[in-house]
Image 1 (cartoon, rainbow, N blue to C red):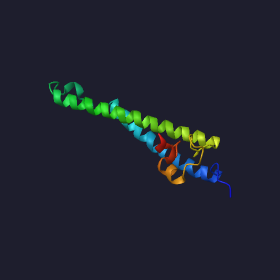
Image 2: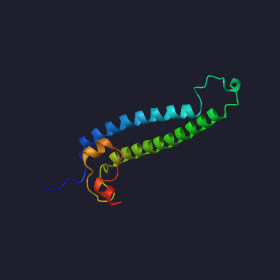
Image 3: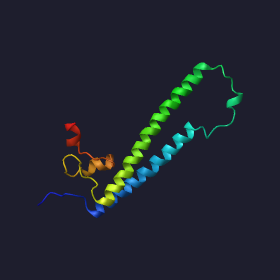
Image 4: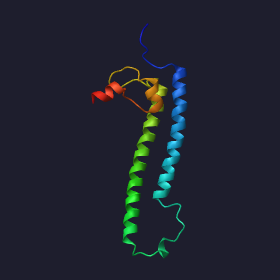
Length: 124
């Protein structure tokens, strides 16, 4: 029996549904992070709070920097999921870009935006 070179349309539809669910959750998380960063949940008392709390301001700055890094990482994850949807439409989803072999379903279920098999990733 010949080795499979791509996933069937039914399998691609299953992956597409999984990716769409993860994408919706990722976008919701990203919007929440951006809302916090942009202070859209502000209760409007910044101008009345004491300005001498240097340590608290430093902690707030550090928290915002960490949140900005998380938001950037989340945005990269969203772009990866969107690219995976394009690969599904092109019927190239699940094919390792180094080895050309199919990435196992188990890996794609855990990391649906993967473009490398574990074998190729270990070679790096």
